Length: 208
Image (tube, rainbow, N blue to C red; front, side, top):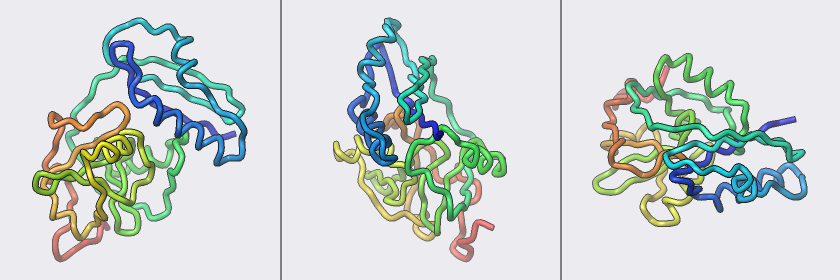
């Protein structure tokens, strides 16, 4: 049976974007034809977490409603090397716990992080959605692998916009940053496009 995960931000005993996480869990059960869901609010209350600080609440669950839970102290780390990786067949529409193919892509790239290119379109990194800066505005690819909760939140609050981002128009952007449930929209962790080690040139859009 497939396992799924939710990584949820908890800071100073407050849970962030819980409604969007709950919606995703509900949609996962519904998509696979299972009735009911897990009550994330109740699970967190039962954990009786009373510590301040930043934590990642990792919930691993099955469609039979069995689950395990962990609260892990969390610190955002900087990225040294990023590489574009092409994979035209990979699908991550639901947040599966099995991340072997993602880890294999990252291992092969020999980079701290990868940006996955699918049929010429920019999608996500191995563990997050991504934003690109053009002028004063930030854009996220329409061609995501997973519609992350932070991505949904930032679009809903109009802090970012969607765009078709391809290998051919990457040179229109000056900077990027990664976002997920644990990584907010944050000017502290903005990277220049030159951080991507294999950006295509005008004469060569291939990643091979």
